[in-house]
Amino acid sequence: MTPDDRIYAYSAVLMGSPILLKLFEHNESLASRVFRLIKLQENTFTVNRSHSDIMAINHAAGRDAVTVSAPVFDLISRAKVVSCLPDSSFNFTIGPLVKRWKIGFSGSSVPDAQDLQTLLALTDPEDVILDEQNRSVFLLKAGMEIDLGAIAKGYIADIVRDFLQEQQVENALINLGGNVQTLGTSAEGAWGIGLKKPFSEPDALIGVIHVTGKSVVTSGIYERYFELAGRCYHHILDPKTGYPLDNELLSVTIISDDSIDGDIYTTLLYGMGVEKSLKYLQQHPHIEAIFVTRDRQVICSSQRQFRFTPLDGSYRTLSY
Ligand code: AMP
Ligand code: MG
Image (cartoon, rainbow, N blue to C red; front, side, top):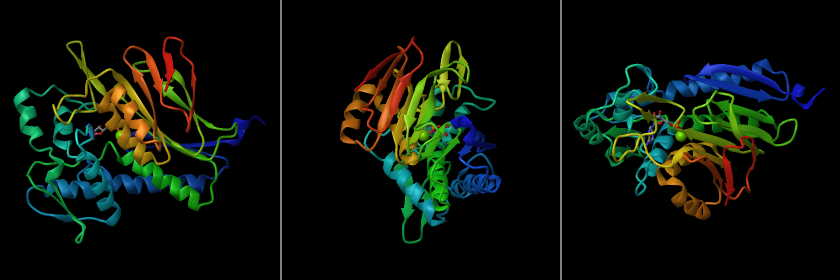
């Protein structure tokens, strides 16, 4: 029996993404409970259906405060803090711009500058009024929309990890459409998570990231985009300009304990670019990162929490 024979993989499509669960035992019932848990969370956070806690807040924009459950209130509070950081490229009120661009959905098009200015006025995170006492959320202006798309998968990946730990599972992997959270090790030692080669076939890898009990989250401009007149418009928007973020980066991967940190920091560091991010990481040792640049460099932070094995000779790997 090879080590891989001991691993059982379960898959589903939820949150519009392929979901993969790897366990060390054949346990159909545990896998269904995990998928049910994810579905339940999806129903709370989605903005792609008419009903969810988040949609209730968005529908009441400019009109009413909406009381939400404690976990939803906490997640929104966290998203507001990160969005209000000076020069933050993370903005959870980006909804009106995301809806206008429709990147990755049919009908996507480049908005005109006037449109963008009008919509940018609806994306000030300070205009989200949080009342801790009543656990209510009020969007000050009509037309404002919260979008937790950049944070929800990480948050849910951590919930799945916590659930599996409660079930005494020691080794497992959950991949929520690119947000990976792991418990313990795989059969062969550290879990190996592929770093995708940008704009290539889905299984083409630049290398493998090895971790034990860590989260690995990647945000890349090649994940969702459309092309027009030779330009590529991808799904991570710059909250200052309203256009997709544009710098030397093709992807940012974060290695951390919690997947929610990974999800937040991929967007934050994406906006900072490599040089500023590397300085930032020195002050924040609980997270680590791998940057893939347009000029084919793979730039790794100090590799205390992971090990990177390069597989593609056309990329140059640098370590800091
Ligand atoms: P992720 O896959 O975690 O990189 O998140 C991407 C999703 O977050 C997009 O599809 C949008 O729904 C949303 N989004 C886009 N730009 C931003 C931004 N600057 N800040 C927060 N969320 C964003
Ligand atoms: Mg994210």
